[in-house]
Image 1: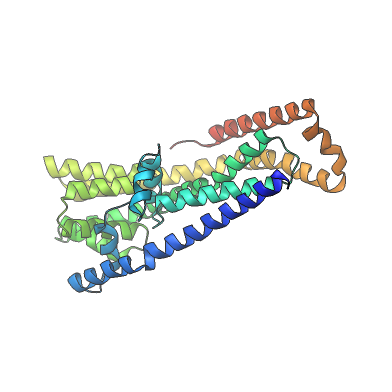
Image 2: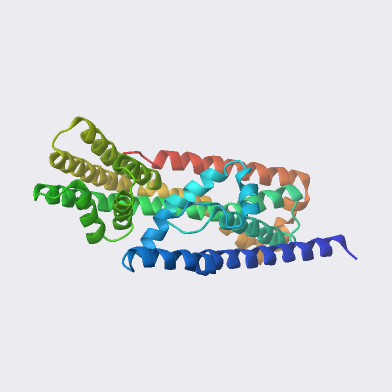
Length: 324
């Protein structure tokens, strides 16, 4: 029997097993008997209102529900950074599930590339890129969430300033913002207020907020509140000033994005053009691309052009991304 057929079957079996395990693990973490038991006890203790949020802020964050897998994941380098990334995306996915998804994408990509006449080095490089797709998507979700939070933050600070001018305390202002504003910012402020109600100190609750949302504007707010609580001062005017600064920064950032739109479009066109042209040639004249994969000189040209494309894309990205 051909060894490639055996390897192909093993890869398919591994991909299907990882997919089934990931689906079962996700269902068990959210709908399993242990999660239902904890949620029921919390509902009986604090009532139905806000029970889902109470579950999310009181349970200890773990890498996996399985103790053996938890110990194994703790030995992996960079696993805590991966868990921190998931926390910043606002999703309930665990690090074990994301790791399984990355391994499944790696196997599926390797299976799809097994039918192509590519060297093993190119196959492994493309398989690693396929494994990184869930990580890139999680990073995109984190950035999208941060942008949405930053756009809502000036209104939240203005609301807190008006509430404190009306005589409300700072924790009550946090609660009002959490109830009035939609998610994700409303949910984060509700989490801060509930952490304080559960006995967490205000500095620790605000520090947890800054860890969950790695936004520069939000960290300005946290640092200003912490300094004011230690040294004193007019917090209402301070919040108003921070709100005005954030609005001006967002306005300037919008102008910069408009002026750099042409450069970003050029990056997309130049990055996708070789693949589109190569795909069209492989459809209409497939034999013309064969030397690139079979001839040693063609492979060297392919690797060199791929490396230069990566360098060019990163160069255009650094030019068009202006920090404000």
